[in-house]
Amino acid sequence: MSSQASTARQGSDSLASRHSFLLRGLLLIIVVGVVMSLGNVNIGAIGQGLGYALAGVCVFITYRILGFVDLTVDGAFPIGGAVCAILIVNGASPEVALLVAFVFGALTGLATALVDILFKIEGLLASIIVITGAYTVTLRIMAGRSNIPLLGQETLISRHSRPFRAWLVEQFGDGLKRQSTNLLEIILFGGVVIVVLAILYWFMRSEFGLAVRATGKNPQMVRATGINHYVMIALGLMVANGLAGLSGSLVVQQFGFADVSLGFGLIVRGLAAVIIGEVLLRPKSTGQLLIAAVAGMLVFDISRAWIFSALDLPTTDIQLVSALVVLAALGTPRLYERYKAYRQRFANTR
Amino acid sequence: MLELDNVSVTFNAGTSNEVRALKEVSLSVEEGDFVTVIGSNGAGKSTLFGVIAGAATADSGQIHLGGHNITHWPEYKRSQVIGRVFQDPRLGTCPGLTIRENLSLAAIHGRRLGLRRDVKKDQEQWFRDELERQQLGLEERLDTDVALLSGGQRQSITLIMATLVKPRLLLLDEHTAALDPRAAEQIITLTRDLADRHEMSTVMITHSMQQACDLGSRVIMMHQGEIVFDISGKERYQLTPADLIDRFHSLEDAELSDAQILGQTGSFSQKDLTALARRSSRNR
Image (tube, rainbow over all chains, first blue to last red; front, side):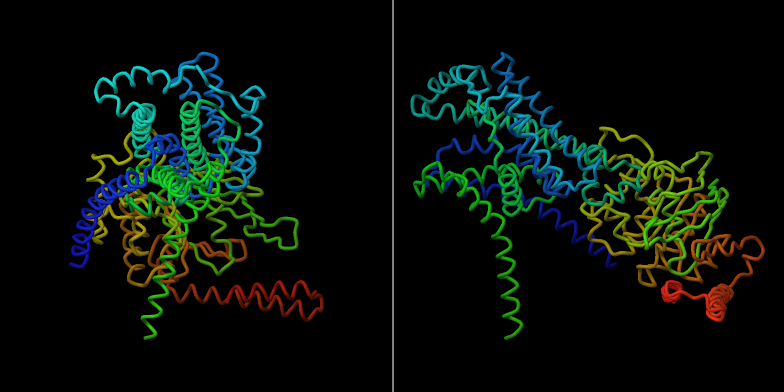
């Protein structure tokens, strides 16, 4: 009897939560839209958010699925960017550059996994060792230069920018001409992010994905099921950091240059994206969690751009503003919890 | 089927904390045997399981299972033929995943992982049938996160997961100790049902003398890293919990008289005294 009742309750819960994710998403889009138009935020922030979105997904996989803070993203991202820049300068197509960047990012993840597994050094420390070494690897890939410009080279953006602008002017007149590069970035990167999310979603719901998800929650049980959980940790880290490399390659093509310090502070940004996405959208299923990480990165970039335009700050202040946005994202839920506990205590004493 | 040949395990070897957890233990379990293992804390029961399942490594001796020498197999590889249920209900299932996902993972048991869909439609009826046998109503809650279930419910799912793909050997490590009496009773019923139905070799550690006498066809008592009694056949069927408790006490008395003899002859060092004190406090 009671089990039947609870089943019914659970049924309606899951139905409501499925809608609540959608409703929250719509509400978020409206709020962000209003803030952007009132705050006069350039839509370039969306394109930038999409470029970094897959690095956010990387942090989501390591932090939420594998269950530890993996800093490798700080190393995999510039390595992906460097590989991409070198390939493009040497005449490779941008698509090939994306794929090779993924592979190099994945190898960085594998390095962390091997340090963790072979030497039994815990994940956080292992990733610090790897990113320290990765700095040199990045410089080596860039042939000793700390910066490689892609001026005049064919990138995903530059290849389509001229025909796209012509098409835009033809369709909508001169009004949107100034935004043509930003719009193109949103469309192209949006497409890449959607395709990658779809593949990742399929992977996460395969047998491998199930084993990776279980490994983060209960490695003992995964071992008891006859699965080598070390392989699953390595696989998870490789997929995650492959995405970071891919993201680095997108950002390099967007900025038009590769730089050795491109990954600086990326882990914080990724954590912020994951937390913001979870707080705002309350995702439940694997698919919703992936979407939330991307949405979190977009909200992060847009709110940062809004702060810049509202306070009229110089661009050199970017790291402090980033840190404050992250602090707000991480701190607000905790402050709210404390406030609730405080109110509870107050109510009890009365 | 399962053969342990003079297996020893020492923890912290070469230090002052050296513990000889297993002392040249030999044990043979036949196909379809249900063995219960009893013994005081520190007797080496869990180490025995650890060395069979691969969580602990043997310093010496050989372990054979189903014709394979598994002495040097890693834990995950042994798990492909050994099903395990732990004392802590949280260890056997994966929180954050649904009942269906947990069972799906268990259904992969011993096969290679692939890129097929994790949750398969044609397995649903199989899962439902297994869950229905327990009469806990869980077959209607396949998409519930296992983190929301009680300890007893999680433990019964662990039991199903451990036996979903029939293992060569099932190891149950005090799997009812952390449950309330009613849930423990249900788990014992389920254990008996599964062991009978699959006719698989089972070894169960228990603290309950009642369980040791009710379940299985053979009782092993361990003490200080050794098997001190191994009762099977006709003698086993006449065994009562009271007999077992008597045997327990006789062990402790023997230990006490050893101490007295040593004390009389005066060859008692401070180290011996503390070791004895520690040992007897463990036994209580």
